[in-house]
Length: 366
Image (cartoon, rainbow, N blue to C red):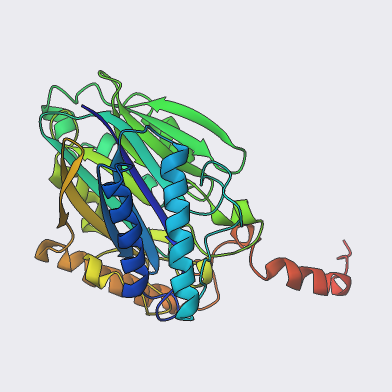
């Protein structure tokens, strides 16, 4: 059975500040999704949150980038924004960059990850959602999941994965894409994805079957808006088991936190902390950045779950390590490497300060 899985998110108002999503906002999203399911637009859905982002997980038979599904999501976010405004939540409607829907939410603010798949006999799906970070945050874990045998032993000993995976990488600044076939092009791949502020892994494919294995949101809010309006807070869908990595291999990259850009005002490096959904409430310096993970089985398009995958004591060390890494970074204050490099500060107040002081700079004599 072919089914489309769409994960669409937006920051439509923080409670309190940027730390959480208000229950009334999520209840409005639940109401809108339930109505769409009853009317037959959706097969199934799940509403959740990561920090101050509302997350819509939907299954349907309309294919990717479908206007009906994207309009439903847009209308849901607009309705939720009205609730956020009534409650005077912080940054109500922050991710909605336009007043009018134009057929697709891409380029309008919300983050989108979608894939149309043929359901397998057992279809295990892991959905990752992050807050206070950017779209390139998935580069390192997706590399580990689908190309690193020290993480995914199936690449070595499972015959159905031994030929490797293909990575589609997007240049988000030049609007170009390139595909790398791994393992033979691993070094070329790393040249680009090691710069996650510009090059993001959009999707991963099984090289034998050509099937989609993973897809992420690569939208960058600052590039869409031309100014800083919040971090991208990306989502990612990963298929697991069978001829894809096992669930444990999919989760393993998060056993040790790694630094990502985002955190306070989207302008700092911080550790990506794996947490349960209730603990996705970044408050210390508006962080540190959080990642949640929900697991589902798909059965005729029905979402069997969710299972909160990071609600597990085996990730307690990762959380403790993230707190220690956060302590180390915070000691740097406004200095790099805690603060982002200058080329990533172009959408903050930096250009205004430079312009204000331009006449005070003098040419150095040789």
